[in-house]
Image 1 (cartoon, one colour):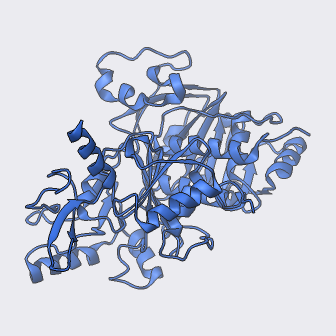
Image 2 (cartoon, rainbow over the protein chains, first blue to last red; image 1 turned 180 degrees about the vertical axis):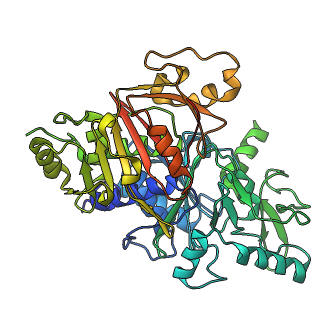
Image 3 (cartoon, one colour; image 1 turned 180 degrees about the horizontal axis):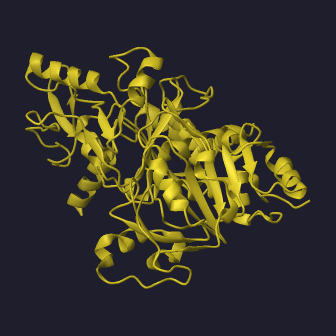
Length: 277
Length: 222
């Protein structure tokens, strides 16, 4: 059986492309789109996959990561899917990729202007847990009324003494739209500000896509007396020794021993290869 | 009847990627990779954009809807033609000097600012900023940014200095000359800026180049 190039039919790709261009023109605004049924369930990256399918060309080199890793189920499956339906080259090396689809991380290696980062997004609406009605959140965005979110962050401080949100930390894009950075750790938020690479976001189940253009202001919400801070570790990566990357805590045996390792597998293996050379 | 893209799937994909980069990096000229045949007065570059983005679900307003043009666009893209500029998702401006005012086009509504028109404007020339002419403007951001502007920019053939822009997608500022627009065009566009995030997104084409100006791009000086 053969598929159209990159699985989706041309009408669907055109619809996605028009929506993507409007998304880039209105940074941080969620554009509705006709999300299609994909050969994997909602919640497995169907939004990101549809965005990637609309972008992909025969010359692209695709990298897919899941929580920073190239070798986890979701990443391997999506990479194989596009290798099969588009015949594109794939890579695990951030520097070799033209297109990177990601679930919940931004690579540690700085991205370039000629790369595009595609995020898989479960819930594109940052206000959803505070206001369940779509009609109401649209109005709040129209009025740029983001008091609800500030109150939520303030309540965190009142209750825990600090802002307890550690992932999917809300950002203000170009000083206008409150936007979900997708469930990336807040450690990655600063990488979005003035990024050289274009960032596109697809939410398949919620049928929304949005974009953050390159060189655009992305501000993580905070208060003057409680400035935004990223996670820090007392540990370093036990495999490559990195002190500046995002670390995963891994249980390694039945007695509860733990080790800390880089979540970005390409970054970690690159550093180990360098150390050996 | 003229042909369209020789290879519709890949030609439109390559064109889209240039349009996406053009929209993401406003005021930087990009080279369109494929120019399909087009009936006058439609420029091949404008035809490439129509074929890439328009189909039976989009309405297109043609400034000069000659029979020949209408037949060509309907046959190859299957578009609905809009009677009024206000009803258009896309508008093709083939003679900018006699174009309708910008506020004649849809600007979206506050809940759905994406329901706004995209204009494809055929201009007489797009003066790339001096360093943007190689390789479709790729990498020109660094060179054309304000740090490099300490040395006076050399005027490119089409430009008489050009206009300076800033906004999302532009590091510092970007300079480009867009020739052949009505004299009050920039005033009209500046008036729309007060309504952000409502607005109109523009694709300027000349020869093989495209320059995009999303609604968020501000004109600093011309």
